[in-house]
Length: 273
Length: 326
Image (cartoon, rainbow over all chains, first blue to last red; front, top):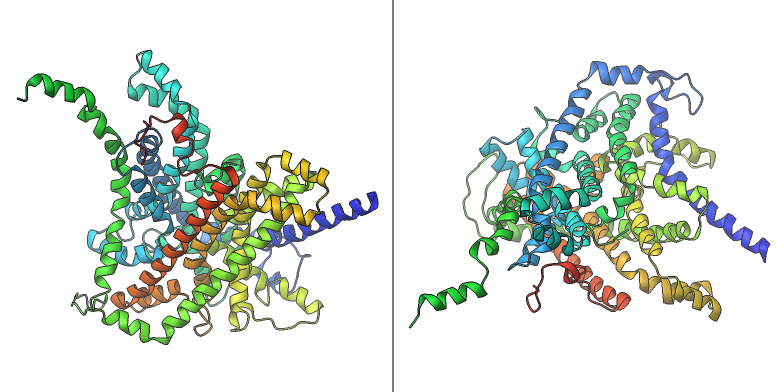
């Protein structure tokens, strides 16, 4: 019996280990390649002389820092707008009952499921007429499709978790609506709000279709910039690996920070992990 | 006669205008910011009925010409087929593999599984397009390690994305790599919130592991599974960046899904109005699939918990008066 159980545990761990190799080895391989020179790229596998030449090439001789900055500005701006406009809206959806409430809430959610190309083709035309094409503001606006539904639906859930009695008590004590919102509710939802905001940042940071069609010359986020390494005639795989690593790194770090809230955020509050 | 007195009484019954309007005012900024994006939807439908191209930007009304041409076009039917196949395979593999890995992680509580719970999220946080680049570094025959491994097994010259036979398999594999963790962590959260008592009674009754899984675990996890399915299927039907970054739809038209076809026609060839029907059809497919899954989810929620969770905690806490719920 115990031998059979031990075999069971071994098989389970073995199956997990197989999946872990599939999931994590490509990331490890990417990091390994960043230290390989072009000369050793094709001739060696694991044993080679590590070098920082790829990092020097990418960070000192290309505009990669500017692409990162563009990504930070656009993603950060998108999150800021979504938080400022979305948190009050989330509160209204959680606490008030008004006509067409669920309709409006689902309308906002449905943006998440709209095919990006469908939105982006007409926007390409509109943006060129409005002068928003290839600007920070243009991208920040279209990124609201990614970040606004997420902020509203996730934060709404956190508001709903707070008992309405607390608000009533504060009202009796003479607090105004704004004071209650800022001094009592916001501190209570802060962990959830920070997690939702970071997840929005990750999604905006990772967005590819929007900047591919609506920007690319003046404003160029790293996702679009990194694909250029694929199109070169002589592909520098080491530099490509550096570009990919520094695009993936911030998202992975943020994900570790918010892992407790991740399930709730990823499912838009439908699954409370 | 209507006297001021009666008017005053009416005022007491209906809340003052300020409080009635307040929720709309609070929601307005968020709605205004996103509603601008609704304009493209309306425009897309209108321009699909015109002859507008970016080279000849004149919107002559041509009726259903673009639509009829699309339905007569074999490329369209190929695109539908590619889209459905991609969505089917990637979602199926992600759901089955995700459920399996989540069950394994849920049943183990050693240090290895605790580390994996965090580490397995990493691929999900990588942009799909960056994930594709990472897999290029793995699959490329000169720098990649997979070919070296296959060579050891005696398999030479795998073409991956460049061959018509393996292109679909390759993009599906990359999609699974990026998105399977999403299914894993959602279902794992569901497993961890399962009540213990039914499983203890089942243990006493001595049912087989498979029987318990089929009759207990699966029905109770169904809401969670359906949410994962909803998110994955919607995204897989529209997937653009993985296919675009790996092969741009090729070789030939092997991976020309509706999204990639619409992009190629509308943006690369600048044929704006004739690209729109392709993407509008995709939008229709996505909507139909979503509403079916949401319906099934509500039913499963009801069966799993015994109550309709359409209005979850709101009724308990919110300022909701009876008979007023939406």
